[in-house]
Length: 486
Image 1 (tube, rainbow, N blue to C red):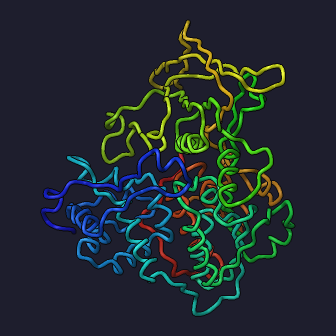
Image 2: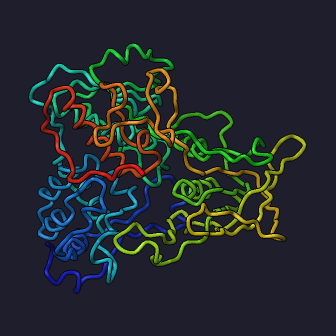
Image 3: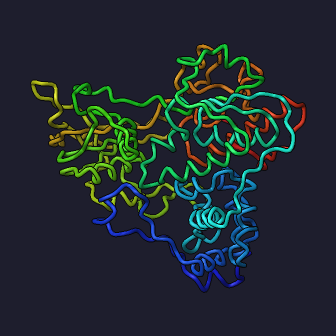
């Protein structure tokens, strides 16, 4: 694969960014693409390793060395075909995936791994530009009807696969536009929403029906849902985690998703009454993950006075930790483009109190430094460090603490069982709930996870639905599948 000596001749190169001062003035994507010649070189770095561990690192089982080789040879259309054979939406993963495939790349043992994610993005963008991605409606219809609840990556993947099998698919989305968290949970500067719209147009042309502003079990009767031959629940894990901290009810303590969603809607011309704004404020983002990073980038674009980030866990090492050797997903420091736009990052810090004024408005946070006591065989214990208390001025605290699981409206109305983590329970490998014609996939089944896992789950669930409805299936499956739950 690639050029035999390519990994020796060429260094890894990634997309660059426009200058911070320029990009914080807008909400558009700000990456600067590499030239076609440079991308070809990057594809040639794929080293024809004996066992391509990138396959196992990718939850979709993408044929990574194969499309890298096609890029190296200049066979871009073949690269697109190979890429789409396992991934319905490489334009999403090519922008948003943390690329576990790269962390499992064999070349990564000795030097920088192949820039798989960027190659993937360039392949799909070339394919759209050349008109290679066209609607492919099924030649025949089975007459079977399938309802897909949720239009995030899991729901969209399930819908496209089931439609390809010839079923009549309707996708229900409770928001005003298709995309789930891709639409309103991901800032526009990370992925412009036209990227979603052009793919949805393809899906509609293939025969999929989308119903927005339709909240099943709320403004859409659950009995109407039961009229479908099969149901696939892909509603995500959207129960937000809060903080049981004194003063958390202060005016100015806001969930990150509310903050991000409002701003994205404003970008597209919607008027939001009493929009939460960081403009001129001392902002503290609690939570050091991707959502926290998105809040940092959005706060800077809104003109925050200062942006500070709290994380209760220790600062990860810059390189791989001994506890996560290759090819495992590494525990190491991640510095995003939003972090580089301006933020003070703090680790091993815990919020003790949200301080508010007489009118209930947030004015400060009280914190304490902490450490973790690790004892083999026991749960880690959080220890507060005496004398480390500190008060931080704060007008806006954004809670980016992740999600605790899916909402229970559908499970309660449909009579579905939950697993020990409060996710929708499904038979391992079959994605089938305790009600035979109802299936579930994505974060709703496995808990908060990655976009690439959502697409994989949607594809695999669709195959099981087709098998249930027809007794056999020609829909593809990845080899192996994910590990059983602990």
